[in-house]
Image 1 (cartoon, rainbow, N blue to C red):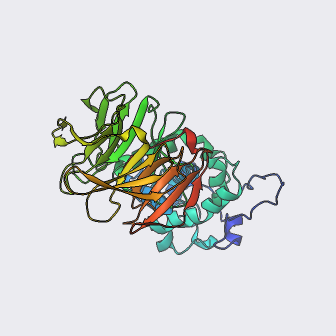
Image 2: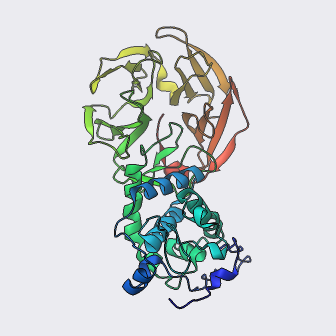
Image 3: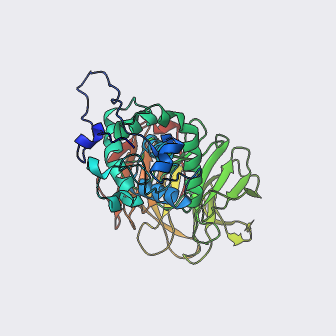
Length: 422
């Protein structure tokens, strides 16, 4: 093959890392380079290079890319750019060949400063090197498509190929989700139903993943959804309460996705519910429900997709505008946190053995706020409250011991979102 000197060969490891545009300046497109993806090489070139490009993606590569992307909390646009690039460059295979000295999933060139051959053919290293440039480029140029973000890193002679691969990349992302472990892998994940009826996952750390990872569409007709390990098998499930009153369990798969939904109840339309291990940490999670007459009930989970008869654990709760559950005083028992509608006070109802509570005022000025307790959010073993205020801002109130830490605003526009219970 006739030797060529690629533009990229003149650059070091900063290849593709672009400075932010000046304020008010147009977002220029990345320049066209002369990098040639392995999938663009002719049969004669592939033969000359002794290079074979499989027609299908390597599942191990997909799993690794998903894992790295999850660890780094990348946006969906960057994830799409990553998978578009992997497909266009190598059909998502870890090649030991390519144009000139290009190798690996992303066809990175040692001569261009990407690293050694051994590094560029290490999928973890290569994926991180791609993301080191894709993440800031996407942040600096928010109007760019995923394919343009890919081109800003790769500097290909075929810049249009990345956006053309969008549908394939989306299918590969779905495939990686099915391969890479449970769809909701962290109990502290902030999951919500958005105004479009999509169930989305914002991750379990700050800042929130933006845009969030899509779990699935078609959730507009649900009053509430709850992330829980309903059958105690170590994989997180979804318990969904439909506006029409049906109660449905979606058991999570250890390989990703959810099994076919099972209806486990009906007549729940007028109940406000939370999920908790009210009878102790070694039991199945059950359902705490507030009726429209102010009764607080506990429905035990009997296993085998059966819910037991309720027992009353409280009365006079029609003055509670919203409630959630967590272990407030760190004694291993489930407590209830509620907002008194008449005063706006935040009350901890601490379980005092059996079905009785002792109430403690723990805050004031909570009128109109929606609350949801969450554990292991922004740190394993942490606990706190997510609070959606009337102006749509979302705040996180960390809890240490029985004291609130300094809250932080973590989002806007959340007054139209339904945050999943935990």
